[in-house]
Amino acid sequence: MESHTLKKYPKRLVLLDVHAILHRAYHAIPDFTTSKGVPTGGLYGLSMMLIKIIGELKPDYIAACYDLPEPTFRKKLYDAYKAGRKKADDALIDQIIRSREIFEAFNIPIYEKGGFEADDMIGTIAETAKKEKDLQVVIASGDLDTTQLIEDDKVVVYTLHKGIKDTIIYDEKGIEERFGFGPRFMADYKGLRGDPSDNIIGIKGIGEKTKIKTLVSYSS
Image 1 (tube, rainbow, N blue to C red):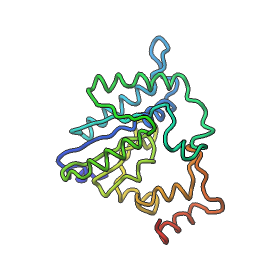
Image 2 (tube, one colour):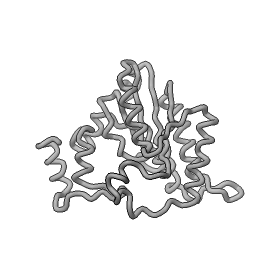
Image 3 (cartoon, rainbow, N blue to C red):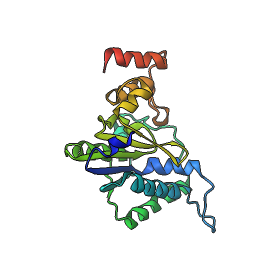
């Protein structure tokens, strides 16, 4: 995103998708440990991204959003949701638990709710906050699921591009350039394409180009 876009709004709120960032960082540097052999790769990557966000984006407000281990409403609607995922490593689970200490140290509030995911917290806060005229919402994540929330340059997604240091910011124009359609089609695209990581089955026999052509031609 160009710098003038970041300077356009007087105030900025950053929403952190903690699990997505931690998961990405943990798998990027799985052997990162303390001198006593305690795994800290996920915590290191999360802390580094947080400090980078504070330095680059200079947010006025930050909130950390968490998943909880209990089943969500998606699991109740679709029992096979996320089926087949192997259990998270104990080292990753330990770092997820310990990550709360980082936000306590930075005095950053945590949002979570039983039966919902961090994405739901992020979506709810973003939809509410975007009504504030002078406020820009930046969603910081480790994946592209939240790009469906992007709106012009009012709500944007700041995500890891390569590894844990290279980041990219997507506004509405950026999503159109990458996928060939806007953020409002992202949920439909996921429905057509499927999402192996969540065990969501796509439509067989429809290739990538046909999916995009279908969305652009017929909308939802």
